[in-house]
Image 1: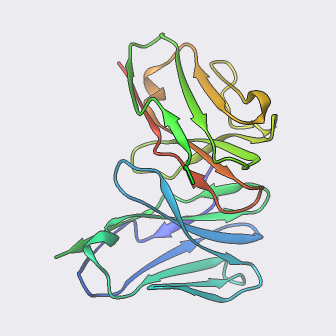
Image 2: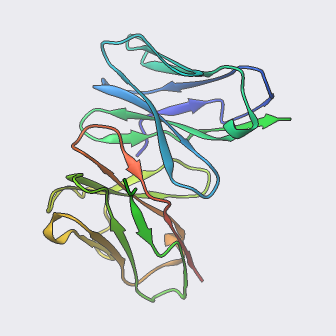
Length: 108
Length: 113
C-alpha cells in the first residue's frame, strides 16, 4: 500500500528553472521524508521534515509541510542536468511508506 | 563508511526456480528493511527487522517468500518458487533505528522468464 501520492507524475523543465513537486498523504504522520532515485540505482535521502515543522532548507532544496492539508512540497531551485531523477516522498507513521514518485527531467 | 551492500545486482531465472538475495547493512544499523519496487512505482515494504526480530512482515507473501537476519547483521530474502509477477527490483535499506533516515543499497533486479 502507498500512503503518499506525488504530483505531477512527470515533469520536464529547462536547466536553470525551478522544479516543484507535491506530495499528499492520508493519515497523521510523525515526519515526512524526500528521497531521490537515479535510474537503476537505490534511493538517496534528501531531507526530513518533522510534523511540527513547516519549512526546511538544504542547499538548493526547500521543503514545506502543511499537516492541516496533509501535503508537502519539494522545491529544487536553479535546476541542473544532474537533478534528473525520480523523487519520492515517504511518510512515517508507524512504518515508512513511499509514494509513486515524480519523474523529473531537466532539459539542457 | 561502507554503504548498504546487496547481491546479486541482476538475476534472471526461469519461473518456479528459487532465488535468494543478500544484504549487508551499514555497520551499527539495527533496523533493516526489504522493499520491492516495480517499474515506475515507489518502493513497497516487504519486511522490517529490529536486530534479529521481524517486527513487520505483514506485506510479505509468506507462501513463497521468506527472510532471515541471523545475528542481527546480514539478511537474506528468498523466493521459492518464483513467479512471473515477481520480476522487480528488491531493495534493502538500513537505519540506525526506526523511524529515521533510510540508507538504501543499489538493489537486486530480478527477471523471471
